[in-house]
Amino acid sequence: MCGQTGAQAVELPSQQFTSCGSQDDTACDAPNKRNQECALVTSSSLCPLPDLGACGASAEDGQFRLIFTPDVQVWPGYKLNGSNPGQYYYNAIVDCMAPGGCDATINIPYPFVTQGAMPVHVYPDPDFSRGCFAPSGSGVASALAISMGSWISPPATGPVSCDQVTAPNQLPDFPGNIDKFCTFTVHVPGTGLSYVNVHLDYGLKGPGVNANPFDGIVDRYDGVLSGGATDAFVDVNNTLTTPSVVAIDDCARYEFWHGAPSGDRSATVQSVNAFKKISGVYSQSFRSSSGRVGIPGVTATLKKKGTNPILASGLADEDGYVLLNYKHTGKAAAFTVTLVIPGVGTRSQDVTLKANGWAEVSYDADTGTWFVDVK
Image 1 (cartoon, rainbow, N blue to C red):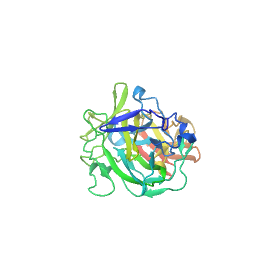
Image 2 (image 1 turned 60 degrees about the horizontal axis):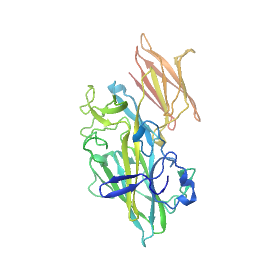
Image 3 (image 1 turned 180 degrees about the vertical axis):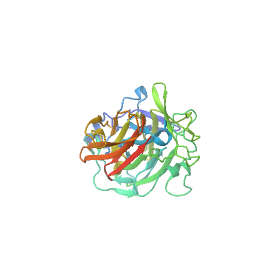
């Protein structure tokens, strides 16, 4: 619970960290809990991440899904196309009564990157609504940046310092690995409690992102069943052979923490791998303005172009994906995919399917752009 005495602590060398908040935490609504320092990773709505029930006894402060979709260019490989939620915030409540204020040191784990030109905001007083952070006003904004380039070639000077990442398996939980962080300082006023949040995204997602920084070629991912979980293996040689190096294991841990004169706090979240299956045509309806957030509840149909019979239909899952199970035989032919998107309307797109082939037909509801790939 937020600020609860004796909250679970994670011990790192010479430090003691306390996290607060969980998927069941509503105590932050209570006025008597607002005077507590804590750390929490939330969705872009500033609400705690849920427990997805996928990490068992190792579950931390919440999980998010990494969404792998078939990659037409390197099939049977996958691409890390998005996450759910699409963006995140690291939230810190810091207490300072020193004249002139205090400096809080924020530590962001690999592979997270900042989102937007002014990703850091400091608010004079924490406030909550229904278990979520609810800051008032615009706060004091800071301009700094963490990109994938910051991890691969850390800046020599500037407000951000980063540990260098030199291989795809630099996430924690691997034997011999230590956590990699980008670190910066935020100044808070000496007037008591301040609320700091940092707008973030998961840096490895996107069809053009290279998890292996040794080259400029887009890596392929494969889902490998290991110990009842599906780990994401990466092809470090960029060939079509089966990869043998783990890039992102299922239930990978990411520890965020900040240090301040009043004490150090941390929050740990996990990623859960979701590999989407191929079935004729698959589609995602999403909003790019929020970091490719999928739109659930979309209904989809597949018809042969210019005809009425529905060959396949489906309902999008919580990530906005829908599978249209249809096996085309014979010569290549034109088909029409129709999406009925809640709050947007009906959209249609033609696609050519080859014999025994499949295709991705996805739609960005914010820009009105279709993304079509055919195998």
